[in-house]
Image 1 (cartoon, rainbow, N blue to C red):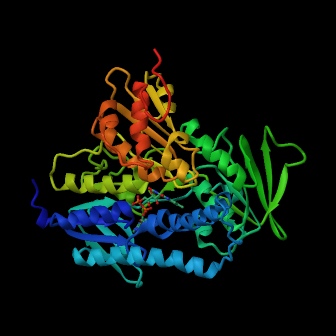
Image 2 (spheres, helix red, strand yellow):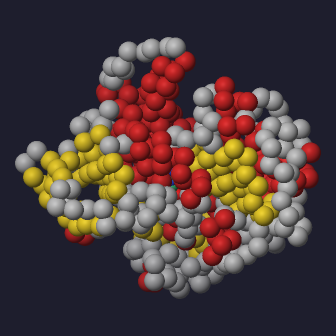
Image 3 (cartoon, rainbow, N blue to C red):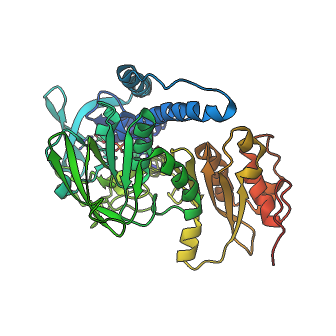
Length: 476
Ligand code: FAD
């Protein structure tokens, strides 16, 4: 085992992967330098990703619920939105959390350097600091956690202040009358939902045949149905051919099966392009190391997150999918433990994915889509939320909880949930998959009543054909 106290570690990039790695390295006694251009740690997730989007989605949910309250005999007047105060509230959330991470860095004696790092060789970085000075710093190990940025389609790269990527959309400069969202993935749907709740007429264009490609269709359906009501249009199997600044808006032209001369062109007040993210692997001087970048731009690593250069590790979005904060954090911790000489590997059975729309969609482990693709025998048990007391009290009966089992061993292989709060509920599924729980484990675990968490237990009961709250006799 290396003497951790004498190890000098640099972490390049202070997103969730980078700060999790830096903090653990400091906790294990290493001398840690964390380098990032922002004033405090946080990266994309805190400054222009997970956190600001969730703050705004919370507001969107409140507005949507105030409309739904009509069903319960409560009529709220239309909300009066003070955009300035909404923006400062969202920015306050970001400042509070990034400031907190700055404090945690200090408490752990992590040296936080505000700047951008480039390689001089495998163990030496040149850091161009925010104060316009630069320094050459040497380390025993370097962890790259440089993250990702929005993908750009060159043809859409028009000089227009109306064109936004996810960071621009989160700035919330105004509430446009109309918004075109290019891309029906989770970022487009989450941000589209925010604008729709604030009063914008939102059109989503997705070139594939369904929203949220990759997710099981039965989980996407209830979301699609609800979005059909809150969005002006959802155009599937459709591509945006061109975008052009057109006086008072951006003129978009569409192509696809459902597109005819009547709907081939439309002018929008703003356009959000959310067509995926690209890894930040073009780090200056990387060619002076042995690090290998693959054809998709991801840095190649082994299960210890070590690159082809023995002194360099890489974690988070820059090493591959799924590009999610919690994956980055766990990889960061694994890399540091590997550097500390612990026998570790990053080999999760389940990395949860959550789409924070309304309803939320969440899944982990094996999906039905994946099982079909791999021609794998599975047993799927579904519990409809219409039979959940809690879902009905919330007036949200459209959800479903399903568990994917190995038919031979009855082991939980995957869990998928659509419904209000699915993102919180999926954690039990992740634990079940990781702990190799079997159907009986879940069915026999007493869940509190009346809660949505019961639906996980109920889905396991469905597997046995004995769910109390729904009649689903076992077949075959
Ligand atoms: P990042 O967070 O991308 O941070 C990388 C940091 O490295 C940046 O600060 C960058 O400036 C810095 N950097 C880059 N190059 C250098 C260099 N040469 N020198 C110094 N610093 C450098 N994920 C979720 O799990 N849940 C969500 O709800 C969620 N919502 C999202 C919503 C939006 C709108 C977006 C855009 C993303 C969302 N994500 C979400 C994804 C999540 O933000 C990323 O997966 C996560 O931030 C990746 O963490 P990371 O540590 O790899 O890098």
